[in-house]
Image (cartoon, rainbow, N blue to C red; front, side, top):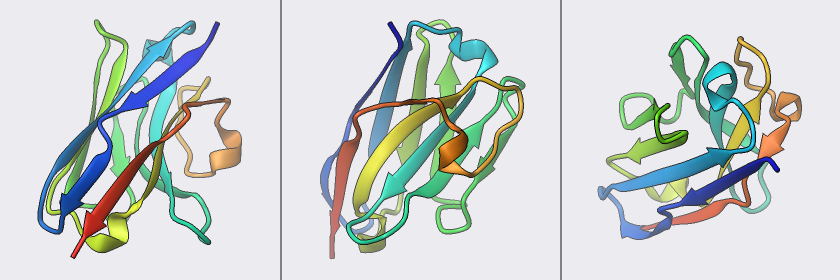
Length: 123
């Protein structure tokens, strides 16, 4: 059974940090594209960061220089370190996996999704 389970969300003041985790099971995560997306109320789902099977990484323009994606293959866990958080980062954050070597930003191309973890940043 495929599972992606996120954790680490919460409430923080602007300028603070949070670290999200996504535990993957039931599929070979090492050969998948793994990604973080987010969705704020009334807005479309937005790609935050992606890492492919070759560990190549890309970030969305709004988080470059502040967020860091990483993965621990031994633990089958994906991370998102979020620093210098802003109120506009407030959203539900989702972990996603795509069974292909290349990563894309289109959320519809991702097969597996976690349940999400809420991040709230106050000013």
